[in-house]
Amino acid sequence: MLLRVTYPEVAVEDYYPLLSSQLVDELKSLAHEVKDLRFVHLNSTAIGGGVAEILQSLVPMMNALGVHTERVVINPPPQFFQVTKKLHNTLQGAEGTLSKDELGLYLNTIQDVANDMQQRSLDADIWFFHDPQLLPLASMLPKQPNETRLWVCHIDLTAPNQSVIDQLLPLTSAYDGLVFSLDAYVPAGLDPSLPVFIVPPAIDPLTDKNVPLSEAEALKIVSKMGVDPKRPLITQVSRFDLWKDPWGVIDAYRIARKEVAGLQLALLGLSQAIDDPESLQVRDQVAQYAEDDPDIHLYFDATGLPVSIDRVVNAFQVASQVVMQKSLREGFGLTVAEAMWKARPLIGGDVGGIRIQVEDGVTGYLVKSPEECAQRIVSLLKDPELRTRMGRAARESVRQRYLLPRLAVDYLKAALARRANINGQSGLNGNRPNGFADLEHLRLEDAAPTKAAVKVRAKRSKGRSAA
Ligand code: UDP
Image (cartoon, rainbow, N blue to C red):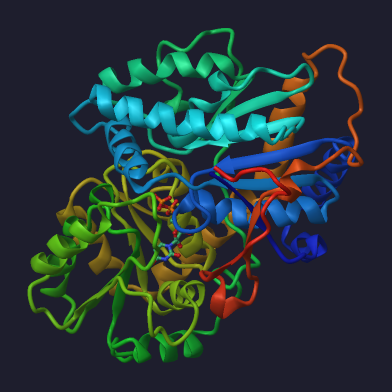
């Protein structure tokens, strides 16, 4: 039921030239303060989607800072993800409710996770349980005296389906604190004594996805994938998901193309998040909607790519004159920050996290309809100077606010704020038994071309059954 995700080492100093000296100092001093504590992040998938993306960078960086940080993913039956996808959709406002059976499956699966954790005596000082998938966990584990348990919710809760949020809210009371990406996502009806932290996510500037890539190299890659490098290109990078509004993107492209001859559109959905069972269906519907337009490039299958998925994403963002994230709900768009980091103006849906990420008219545009999106595409494509100016501002705003070390500082502060309220905490130390080492390992390779590939190393716990 549980897998420990491990990583090759990284050099934390490589981040420093990109940061203010104040942030570097803060990071080092907080890391020093928690050097005797064990942090553990638990989420539902090792790869694919924003949370996996963040953790696969955050965890090795924290360890490089000397903060003992583990990452564990659950390994539930596929039906669990059918239910949690529904949960995700309804929490973002979709109609519907969880049936008794669905709720039962959800809670029973997490109960199995809790049992497995107890059986293995996994212990930590600070736990981060990510997203609704893991929400019930704290209520199913007896609280240890020195533990701090935080629930991190990454989704857009601006207008949740009330019946579902009512089912879930009681589960929050087992936590020491809750973390949301935006103020606007803090649900009404929370226990007012429960501390809430607002921590927007961040991107890793040192991954293959975000390191500098020349335009020439980017064009070479996208042309190997069927794009004409001589004609204008606009892109949206996203899982095929209804909230990402791929249909609206195609509508905007169709309108814009009337004014920009030869315009091409790429929809890049190579991410294979196993917790997103709907993506195949959405992809098929989008493919149908795109008809036979040879200038709409849909990418879904990650086999046979010329380079790694990360590098492909990088290349499309760099090779595009404009990048879109026309979401209808978006907790926080990592893709938004990724494109802005490449100095590309971003046209985003005027929703959720995108509203704080994009300064309308300065670092990109916020739009409410395909028509408005098309209008912004056209004006940006016709004005290279505007693109350059906005792109520069976009990159600088990401540098200041949305790079990984800032997220690390915020998580450490949240954890420490809660520990200050717990009496009798001892300085825990790294020498105690580490039950995590006995879990089956899932090693995430750092080698760029295979970052998406994972190698499972069988390392069964001695004599204990793996659920
Ligand atoms: N992603 C990717 N390949 C794709 C599509 C998406 O690697 O073809 C990555 C994307 O670059 C980003 C993450 O998946 O890092 C998606 O995170 P985001 O917060 O934008 O959306 P989520 O999928 O979590 O809703």
